[in-house]
Length: 261
Image (cartoon, rainbow, N blue to C red; front, side, top):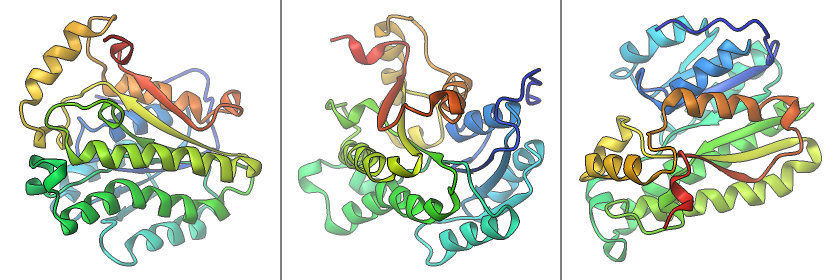
């Protein structure tokens, strides 16, 4: 599906990094499409050589001038991405962190039983990597900017089978608030985007996910599931100067699901 053409390029001239595109069903892809439609130039990463064939055509559709591998667990790769952005653009206006991971045995087990190694891996990829990206982005956001990460309702309510990822997302949302307070004086905004359940590759690792989708559709006031394009449009708005005094938020894009008991 081609990127839609919009008559007003609200983000024309803005430069952004999008991390987490795995395929055309990814939340990060919905965000990237929206940012590009609004006129932004994008840097795009892919996880590894296995992922590259799935992501490269999407990066080409975005006309991304920067396309690099990024596995945050591999030393030096994250720094290399930011070095390339600094050399190519000399600035960064926004970034989207849309990655999370937990070893299968850790994710499937009880939080009470989480092994130390599995817990640390979950936290490193799902939470610390966003903090590290913020650290590297800060000097490139000389005129302010916006940092986005993806979270989920399971951070504040116990969602069956979400398990240790709920703990990681709770830490991630807390990090958003602290970094928003620290970076706010520099004009850098920080947000956690909390979509309703989506049929993404990452979600496929959660047991009984189809039942969760059906529950969300029936329970949400809007009576429909959110799409990656819904998430993308809302995220792109928050990167615009019109949203310059909105920061530290967990923005729910879920048809109102989170307000219903």
